[in-house]
Image (cartoon, rainbow, N blue to C red):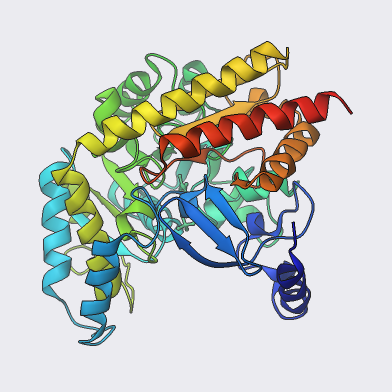
Length: 431
Ligand SMILES: *Cc1c(COP(=O)(O)O)cnc(C)c1O
């Protein structure tokens, strides 16, 4: 595989951008090798600067649920751009997307648009703190909520693989207000809430953990958290930046039938443009300025290009619920194929899948939270990653990221991927 142009760009990039990338996981640090510079993408395929083609299992970390360069999304963005890319004043598109979301998601009465998932989660905990008058928040080890200071306390994803469980630059003052529990461990949450009685403003969680591989909630976990939040007057924040509109149009809340007080969105909501959002119960959202006292603002929030892209994608998904069934079918074939290949060659593994999110851990398990996820064989994953890449399959370049499928994937793409996986496994085991 010729990657000369990527190599050249990476060399230039390293001189002028920290690590050569604008988000750490892109640097391939946990798998080694040269990051590939992408030139274009269409449907389920990525093309790098050297013209190599890959089947994409990142989907831009989620947004490309219907594939890249989706014609209606591209058209909407191009049309809107002709009439200016930002006004700094409200627009019709913002009303329409807010109406679409609030009318589709029970419990989201009002919603505020921001520019990233990070911003959404930072803002959500600020509102929860303002609303409750309490300062502490509880998060789960291995769950990622963006790079806000309050979350970089044993954060997952990028921070995890880089071996920085918490980041320098975050003050000890901030750190002391973040409490950490193990995902899927209800007893521990109860212990923490009891030990910090009347001090915890919010529990924030990924309802399906997707930033330490993919770990679904155990039966009763979300319901239990809901009950604990009610008992202790704690705001329950579901971070659906990854799962929202992906595992179901209504997100994890719809699948598990548990309603949060606040929900954060990102990724799919912007169809690949920089968007995040937080929303929830009217009485909490009315704490947000200018209605209420909790300050939160954004010069480019509700940007017309981003709103046009997001609105177009969300409308399509709402009108075509069969997309989710198709994705589920494709994902389940892939999951079964992975499982068969690993079982056939006696490779220790734990696989989870929820809809079009799949995570493979190369360990005997059990994997129910971070301490289990951490046991995955990272070197083995690195070999899988490169073996797949050589065979034209682009997996997330980290053992702690889920695979994200797009409905642009064909059955041929799925079988190509499974053949590549079997060949890669055999290659690794024979060397
Ligand atoms: C990606 C992600 C974020 C952060 O979103 P950004 O747009 O990268 O800031 C927050 N929470 C979850 C669950 C995510 O997957």
